[in-house]
View 1 (tube, rainbow, N blue to C red):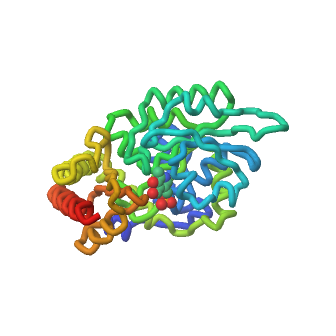
View 2: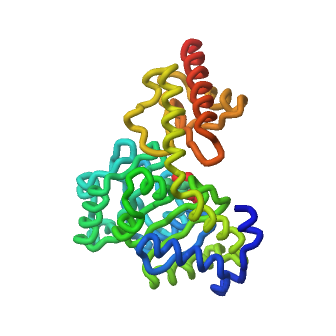
View 3: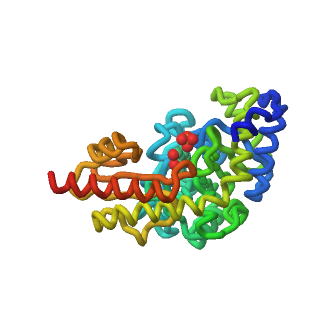
Length: 331
Ligand SMILES: Cc1ncc(COP(=O)(O)O)c(C=O)c1O
């Protein structure tokens, strides 16, 4: 990947002259069945632009309570674009059309905020790598179309959903008006996301990206890493899913109940620490070279990826299990 980046032909992307960026945008759009793409520095920026292309200031976007757009983008959609967000409940981030239908409020007139778009996440990060059922994605899409509201996919980890289910990327892509995809997560590129949509929306998003200071010059060096990842790191995501199961099984051997093995779908493992505080366990694991996040007071998230082997994940799971068992005895 580093060699591909070093050798990439580059140009000025603000003028649309970087051949490597153009190639990444074209290939990603084609894979997703969309007309055009826009390479952005982060998934957060791609989501910010994607949602804005569907929602005007003063209108609302609906998403689930644990959505990355609502919880982890620092309020940007409201702070920068003047949108409001309303959330529907979900268990482990799993989408259900009835939850959306209950709060969808298009053309709400002069008294209430109008829903202009629905945003969903696949796979769902805080839900624990949850894969959204295709029929629910389709049902929400039909609901949106019938109501005349937009449909955005935060597909930061859509690659994992595709590998886990075998559903073609294009089948997912065609359900949505705008889709963001990250290259810097499971695919292992250092930087960047692509937003795909119609040519008209992408042209508008390009202007807004520049307005936000996100126009970049010879970004082809970074795009080359993403192209390399597409060619070499996509199909191997199944190995990360297997390693997540290895990790989780090692934890469960030591602390049954800390992890729900039947909920494990992709490369994210959520550990429930019971009454044991998560932060000291995560800190002790870090001291021994295993990095996990304390996502909540009693919740730990572990993510497997291409830089850790199945065997290492087994050892990491054993370490986490031992630490959890020791801490819960001490508590
Ligand atoms: C589901 C989801 N969407 C978007 C993002 C944002 O990506 P970035 O960190 O590149 O802004 C993340 C990051 O973890 C994510 O998990």
